[in-house]
Length: 121
Image 1 (cartoon, one colour):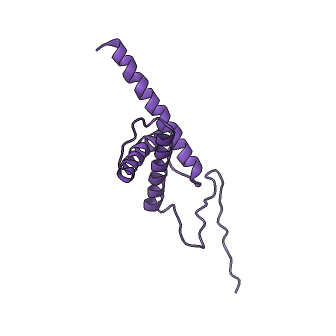
Image 2 (cartoon, helix red, strand yellow):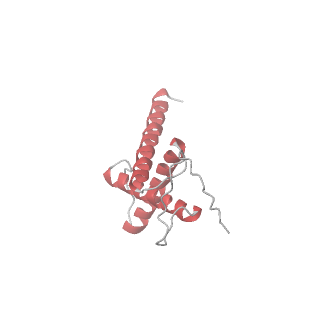
Image 3 (cartoon, one colour):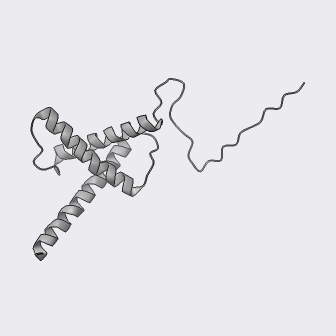
């Protein structure tokens, strides 16, 4: 394989990794709440969100995005990532739609003790 082509593919791959990471991080920052996963989940979230957002854009606008790494492509990728986060929260039960539950959990480092009520007769 030609070294120039290897350089091109490595450059494109690293560009997509950076693009996916930034769009996944922005989607996680926009939607409040705790989400599982670390850096790899955020990267996959951004990359798959870019594919979903691009497909929705192509379906609704009737045209493809010629260069996904652009302002409209970035907005579409963040929107697709937010759709994935919303679907994850709906299917895992982390999104509470009723009024009495806020969906906010205590931080994981907090030791929440249960108090026992002693009934006196």
